[in-house]
View 1 (cartoon, rainbow, N blue to C red):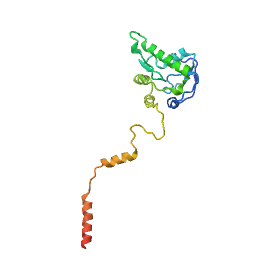
View 2: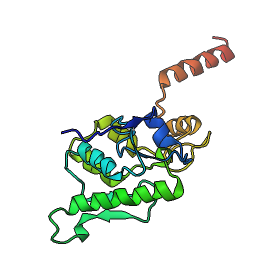
View 3: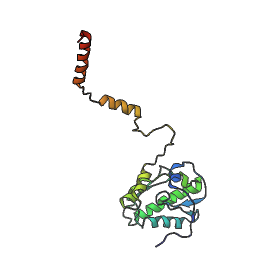
View 4: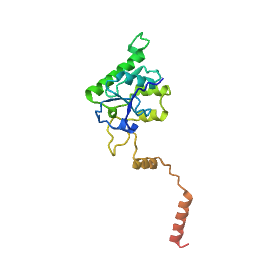
Length: 192
């Protein structure tokens, strides 16, 4: 079953999605999987039901129990709070998508400001819904700006690595050479 009604596509690469923190208001609803499944489907702002159905289609109706907003930290949607609801995961996911819709409409947010939803990523990975390399790449995404010269937290400069290697080196002396040199010096001093 296809959940892709007429859609407009935009050419973006996954790098652009996760690396450009500057929102560009373009008035469309991007696929939840842009940057993960290379789906560039977009929907008009008033086509929210088709947008949600499209995204649920990618999940093959296997919806996560816990999801988070693309843009803010205030909202984590957890289906466990919907006690007794047999469709809790679906309702939870739809609430998330309406929340994201509000950010896009009210704040002019776009695909360029999306941050990974790590709850969703774990769900997708656990159920084999995204390729392992996409999962790893999305997990490595950093929200902090990247400045030239700033290294990863466990980066060790080459000079420090060499110094540590030198400090940890075990010195084994070859006494034979030292004895020969001493013997030569002794003979040359005493005229032998």
